[in-house]
Image (cartoon, rainbow, N blue to C red; front, side, top):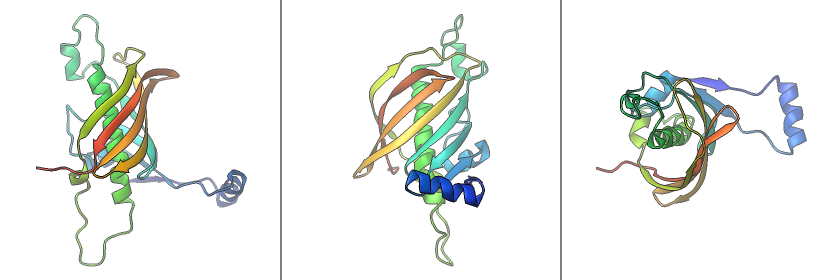
Length: 183
């Protein structure tokens, strides 16, 4: 896993003093890292990379949209459009990366303890609220995904998500996700 650190220590200290508080440590995850973090596999793995991840708080990600995606065969054959549900799935997978990162970046378990499989902690999408789609997503687009985790409600977590193509907003809304898998 790749760790993104602040610039040279002197500049980082100056930036932290200017901001009035220390900047949180951020992480970046490659597609191989994400495969270890999530239980999803092709054709349902919808996120290519994650960056600016503050474990348990927020993160950004990328989904490169290719004409080879299996859903384009039927949605729509003469005018390829990425289904909204797949855009939401990509955003939900970024959410999972953000909260699994919290487990991965925590201090190592005590000697003799096996670290748990992080992908086993990925729960389910429970609710989609106020989701608005404002731009068609087509082959060749690159979705930039943003997720900000909100408050915990027992085994649920509220999340604000958005997806953009360049400077254009493609979708934004709120999700509720489960923070554990049952059954």
